[in-house]
Image: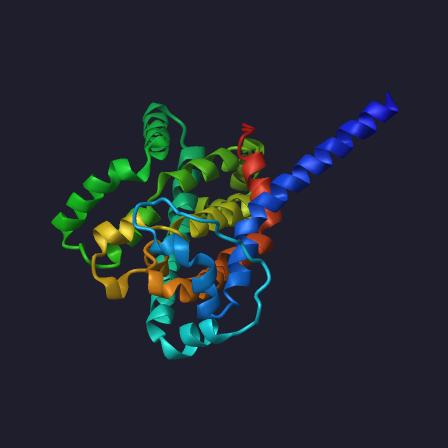
Length: 290
């Protein structure tokens, strides 16, 4: 029995390690390729980008160790071509207000759904769930029409407003906030606490992990958005860096690797910083304690 258990654990460990390596391989290859020279990148991946039919004739050799380490791609991105940094800051200008706005709106809405339960509240919350299940492509045309009616097309507000009122954060935080025992809130009310004090001193502190989870998920989601800027923000000077990474030209392969590495850093740091909160927030949001 012990041998079978040891064999099963060993097999599971090996299988997990293989999947982890396969999962990390694109990221490791991107980081390694960002230190290659343009000539080496063209020699390694030129066949892929030169193919117009989608079929690559010949063998493409994946290299994880550059023949000669060079920082020329990073020098070009950071110092010689400011348009890439401009697009990076465009991403920051779009994503940060969306994340902060989602946290504010979701906190107030979730507290309302938690404190005032009734038929109307349940119907509205059910509508939130239905909207959450819809992919963004379904609501893209209505967003375009409403943005045009409000005169927001080709402005950053056309992306920020729909992102701030995203239903997923309201759903997640409501499920988490309903775990707070009602006796705790009633005790605070009997002690003379106002509704605002209950919201800020009791509800929000106990939802810290859920707020971290929402911030991480919202940041990663909108940090990688492509469809919204292309449709709602056609001005290329205002578009985020994710749009550039989705349309790489053959003569920009090396720069694209360096840009991709720089673009991964904020999301990776935020995830590593709040990994524990992310797991806890998603885990506990599934259980409701009245």
